Amino acid sequence: MLGVHHGEAGGLVARHWKLPRRIVAGITYHHEPDAGSDPVCDVVHVANVLAKRVGTGVIEVGQDDQVHQPCFERLGLASRSLEDVEARLADRLAAVESLYG
Image (tube, rainbow, N blue to C red; front, side):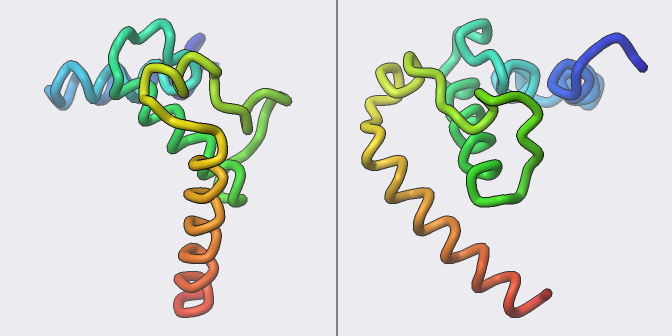
């Protein structure tokens, strides 16, 4: 409808709110972290993927639940450590949902 995807729209709002440039980049490029050229883009991308994997986001295309491989290298992560974080995140989300429905 607006001619931009939600990352771009979010980036425009963040820029309007005068958020730091790196935060704007993280929002704008969370689906394309390579284009953002900043570790913040990688971190937001990984967080977005983890959120989708534990069921709090919508997987629009098949790759939405996959971390871009270069992010692992740039952040010094192993895919196994990401699986551990995902499991802990799922447990914590379940605990919160049990409290608040």
